[in-house]
Length: 568
Image (cartoon, rainbow, N blue to C red; front, side, top):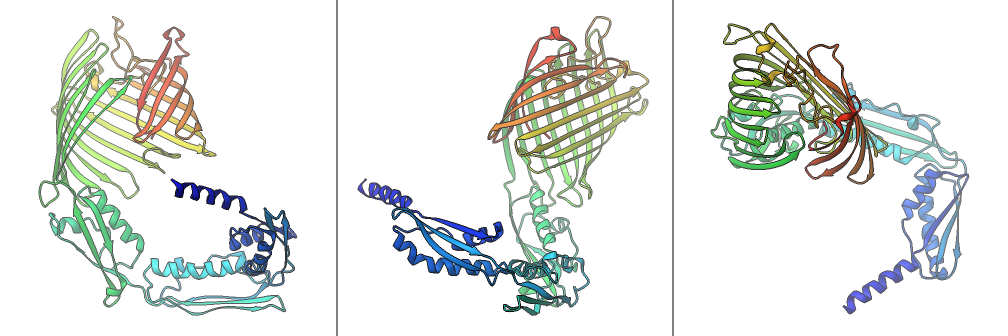
């Protein structure tokens, strides 16, 4: 305890004698002032006399800081002001005329001389007549060396790098001559021992042996291997010291993840109430990288059980063929449906960044919609595209997501009816001045069919709810039959504009306007609602609580909406 008290007294005493450095420059120059303060750093003294002893060293440091910016004729006069208990070192600086560049020679020779990444930027700071700045000179040197390391010119070197300063004439010459040498190439990729076939691992490599060296390719290989889902640790190295005939062998150390994982989750939203989810995955079941899994989801309106088997294609980390089967039941309002599905989907990440899915499924569904009921059998080919771009996966500050899903069936080809169904979705998020967030959402869809009365409930459009038009309950916006029961629409359009303000870290207030409906004709009226809400950015993503009121139907009253999950 005595030691702790002594330490606190010492800290208090040290804080009390902490001195302040005051730099006064004529004419005013913020860059020079900041450079002096950074060069000297914090100083302290317990008396004016002790401060005077520090003045000479501080003056020399200030002169060095000014010379780095080209002020070789500056005058620095130190003074000590303040009381004896709180002395202040004041540096009065007179800059004088700086040294300026006379001749500037920047030359790149060797095999890489014509490459764009070795083209030096046309900087106004390195032109004849510009003020000498040692930092710009050093930055240019570093740029050449860094580009050489990134693109595999490991024998690159400066033939000449000099800065010649004539202090009396206030002139300086810069000479930078750099020879890139030959460019190295990436050789064969070798892997540590793993449970997987060598052929599967080689299909994950995003380059061919012999390509010119690029550090981005090494980083990409690391990312792609992690993205495959087979490994929990990846280390990729390409040491230039082991190169032979300019070919650098690439060595990869891999740690395979555990075969099985079992996950449980739950949540709550005003759309479906409490829900529970269980998931089992066997991430790899053989040396060819096949995987499989099963999922179960339970909530009051929806129960779902499904399983899948996945075969990796090329490249395995972003292309696969998945076979699936499942059973689902939905009982929402006056709509009840049970469906069985069996199918396959080919998913691939395209070079453009889009995720593309091509699928084919056989679906049988028994449904009741209001007073109608039926049973359908459909063989449905589908095509989907999806892309999400954001600066953070859990709580982005800006980004967008796009979705397109097209599916259909042909009567007589294992299908009861003809139909084509298109669903489009878009979301965008932009943050202004860190606290002001603007979120937009738009979704639209339509069904073309010569027998819409036989289109099952799962394919029809409904609106309303947490992710649609707030102010209305889940899926309560829909055309009705002659008994007044909701039966789903041919078309759907819903959009939202939302503003959020972060009043304290992780907490945001929101206001929004939603508009949309599910209809049988585009001439049918849209519904509009508005409201306010609160957002908390939890470790697993934003949690949203909204209070919404219908403007189109004021008698609907206020509705509370609670949901969680990513905004994009």
